[in-house]
Length: 210
Length: 210
Image 1 (cartoon, rainbow over the protein chains, first blue to last red):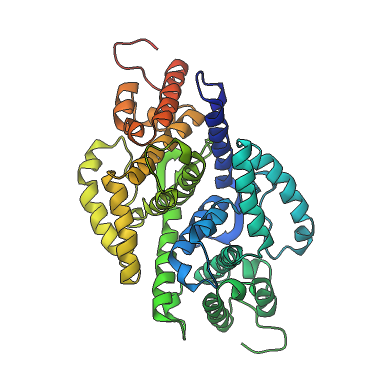
Image 2: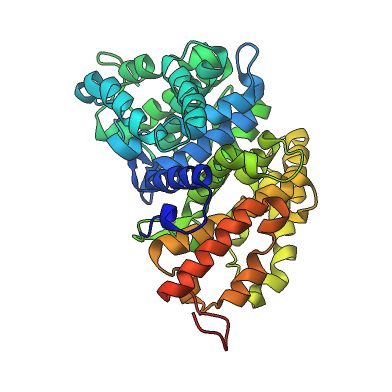
């Protein structure tokens, strides 16, 4: 790849912005656990981020509180960008989750550091707000990030639930924050879980019958 | 795939919205002519749409006129959604371009028709505004949609320029609208063209020397 910042006559600020955008392209090569809905392959993080932004645009009316959907969309466009440096950590991988936060902070230094400093600060603040999940905007964004893989697992008949031998109790514990950001969408998740258990795609809680 | 709208107890409006979002998932399987920046494979339209939304977020200061970047991002998230019904038409395919507009209108009826009617109208209007490319928001969105494949072709050393034996004159004619939405980005495109011609990745205008 020929770096754009070696082109003659390019404004320095613009060259940094373009350099960031070309680094971001690497997100198209980061694979997640989830399959796309036709089951043909794993989803990459760039297309996942687009899908979530579309979720926000269409499902905004189900958010709790006074949500600014433009801020939500910005968070979702940026929320996994650190994965160009540190890869994706599946929700069900408890060992990796312990070290994930530190790795992602270091990755954020690199990734946002490609931008001019004013933009690096503003976009990193949005990423950090998403990670902390305390504001209404971030809670809604997190709810969508938890809901989408549930719908994909249902679409493909198991997906990461089968890969990680997940039962409904563990799945509810890991995705229950959907209720904080969008109670109606938590209702959807529960309907999907019940259907998935009935079809044998998600294990019932041990000791219960589907 | 088990349709979500057969789940018991799901609100009808919400079921339509989720149905639209799962149909939209098919955009991940629509391949474009462009390669991703590492050259490993063709880009799909979903990840392309994410990349453009990020372009808008980062490059907004280079837009001409009074641009509402949130409207620009919405257009970019939606701009190629019709391709789930009619596929991608490469910029260099002149035969296909003649029939493309009619096919895309019919596709838009289907795609936006999955949504509740109020949302279908609002989102389709944004798509139509992008297609018409007359407002400052749409001109900036179009400029980004033309710029990004230029940067990818440069990154991979030819890409669709080589596939379609494109020369610099034709490429300038097909992408010149970048200047309407963002003159500074047209300057970037010109610097990239000059470098690509010098490296032999883009044919010089016939009768000229690189």
